[in-house]
Image (cartoon, rainbow over all chains, first blue to last red; front, side):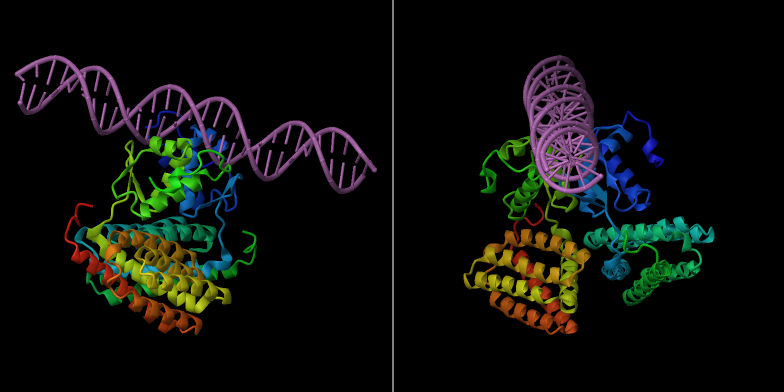
Length: 234
Length: 234
DNA sequence: TGTATTTTTTTTGTCGACACAAATTTTCGC
DNA sequence: GCGAAAATTTGTGTCGACAAAAAAAATACA
């Protein structure tokens, strides 16, 4: 059981129920606290979070819309599987969104966007320094999410966030081997991206994002290739 | 009240309730039978579709996830507005998805994909011949959806479908002036795209999709520019 | 008559209960 | 003992009801 699950049973503000369940489940899914394929029992969840099944079901519908769970009709909904066979479609979309959001950030960013982006980058650098792989994964996501926000295109942003989440789940699988690559390189690449965004150099931002994406995709590929266990099983 | 609303009150299969409500509402929203900004009364809807509020609420959650309705906490959910001020973000994403899906279709399509695509194209050509603007909008969507399916990338596909739906809603606003452009041109462009996909000529497919998207964006821009009524109001 | 405050109404968010479907176990025939 | 049919159990899909929150109406007051 995760930490959030053991929260105070009663006294939650009206209307926050669905959001609460959504957040708990989302975190547990992305942290792999709930393994892919795990069936989600509504009644059990209702008891655990001490609320009725109605808000739980609505949260599940929302998660299903984002592809984080799969609903089997008249049967339990399960945590979405990681489709190793079609990872290339994920990498393809991820790379394109890296590029597009960084491009548009260079074009459309406003003054305070850079403040936020730099703050996220500082957190990422801190995580690298601390050799904290889990924090690196989380802060890296937030860094790119901040860039996506500065890009000011909600369509790209929502897809990108979805992809970053999926990536977070994937990296979580291999986080233990996340340190021995060369994460310092990512810090430098991030700095370059920030500089090109600030200079509004669209083409350079694009190129850097492309390289950066290739780096990350390559690293994930290596981590998977090194691990010949049960790729198909999941 | 739309046609679907007046369906047989009782006797629907178990588990199909949410899907049914979702389909009804989605159609009415995209057809502008429900105008943007219209509040959706759950009780009223429940009576109209003769079912309880529970499946209705779940359908609304799903629609909210796709951005077709907006949920105001403790207040009624309303049909999503059309954001004329940020249409450029829509056009940008739409153009990119036109390109990417057509590219990937040229790369990844399989034999029977072309059969489906050609069938959709035939329906589109028929609509043009019949001067049926509404059918043109609908069949054009299905044509590009078929290409997106052949592209075999669910991430792009889901975003593209969302954009096509949003576009359907937008075009529906101006469908009356959809004839007097030159829709015959679109038929030819579609044919060229099919040919380049079949030839697996990725670059040509990309270029054609780009042109095609520019055409459509331009047409929508013209339709909006010609109409100086209540752009801001909606 | 206009404005602030209280009351009423409307509508959402949540709950507990029941019905139905699928999975599981038990029973029965051989 | 083994396989098929029946019964039980488990868990989802839907319902009607209630409580809280917001909006609307009514009232009080200047």
